Image 1 (cartoon, rainbow, N blue to C red):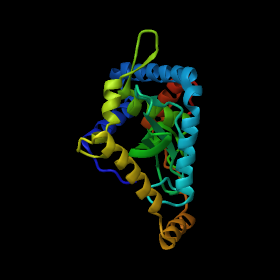
Image 2 (image 1 turned 90 degrees about the vertical axis):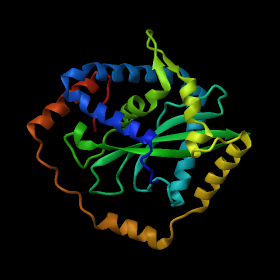
Image 3 (image 1 turned 60 degrees about the vertical axis):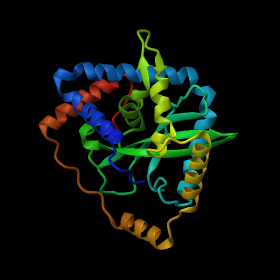
Image 4 (image 1 turned 135 degrees about the horizontal axis):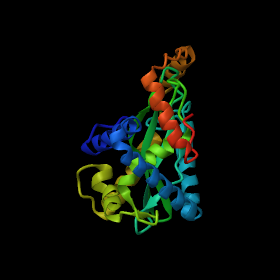
Length: 266
């Protein structure tokens, strides 16, 4: 799905760039320490709360898989690989949540990025409706010695939780994750999800259903599908570039840090 570079998206892009540079700048070690602390708090939160919402996460995964298999436009490419992150943050009413999708870009062999995606769910009556919003690319070679090999799901989850999701929570002195409901509710409002309009409850429900129905009915035609797969089949994976000393030191430093919390880069 294409997304415009809105002010909110610029914030996410800037935060990602900051995180991508902290491993090689001694003046910003505190930022990396905070990212590690935040991630451990999210892991603790998931361990304590996952059973209460795992069925919703599974429904979301199945929904995206169905859309993908039907080759709907704006769905995830069938040749890419993704997971719905296990961290779901719900509003106080429990009828809306935000999460992230960790996506390995495999559909283009020349790709040197993977993708962080924010996604959300809205419950209307007994039915859940799922959608995705903005995408943020992650340059593989910043974290890995391989430019054309995808990053691990664990690393993508770490980046998603500490650059995208961290605006919706705080961490207290006991390393507990505390949801910031004011910011989360603002993010999950109709104005933020669907545009600049203040939607009434009735309008929000109708807008959610309309968007879902449009996406379900909007499929790629056979010519478009054939062109995509033809490009994939005829493309060769490029040779890996030579690793500079500066890049090697950055990757080694980052890997050592991630290893302390059991995360492998690839």
